[in-house]
Amino acid sequence: MHKPLLIILPGWGGNRLTWNEFICKAEKKFDVECIELPCFGIERCPDSIWGVEQYAEFVKKKIEEIKLATTDRPIILLGHSFGGQVAVYIASHNSQLINKLILSGAAVFRDDKSIRRGLFYAIAKIGKLLFKLPFLEKLTIDAQRILYRIAKSPDYSHTTGIKREIFKKIVRQDMSHFLSKIDLPTLVIWGTKDSHVPLRYGKQIAELIPGAKLKIIKRGKHGLHMQYPNELLSLILDFV
Image (cartoon, rainbow, N blue to C red; front, side, top):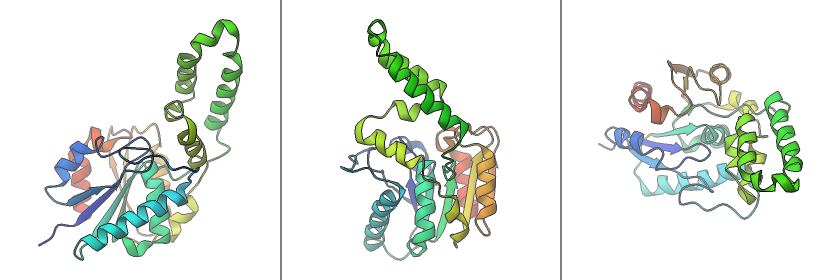
């Protein structure tokens, strides 16, 4: 009998390597596919500035290819962080592709007017001007990293060129209005110590998706697949 197929969408900066420990454990119960998103792993960045819609189309084609190459069996889509943002779009627009949805630390709520983002761009802009001064020019790279760390957006400081423009676009794309349109068995898994996407957002996601279940991992941070892979897998197995 064929195992269920678990398809993983990593978060921003994630790839098969960062998920390797979890994948090795999950492969005892599932056939596992990790779809690396463009700009990460082996996938090069696109030539244009992609948003969530373009990433979702990329993933949709990958899943269609996987379905053609496998026998008919349940497909579970697991989206983490940015991967969860993409997974929500897919589940609400192309639900026929998958049988079940799992969201972990999903970056679904994106508030353009948030204080943090406003502070971040203000700090970044001021810093950019400040470090043009001749006696501070040599400190620019390190100083920018410190500024971005203060603004709690290290992902931004790790990007350049088209990748940075993509990041700036996707963090403005709120997917929360699609949650109520998801008509799939859904499991929402969150850590109590997630500082990147706080637990309150996980609770809201579970409330807005009809019939969704919420499971919480105590002391869990944003990367549950690295911090608590056994607990994460156990919750997924119970759900499946």
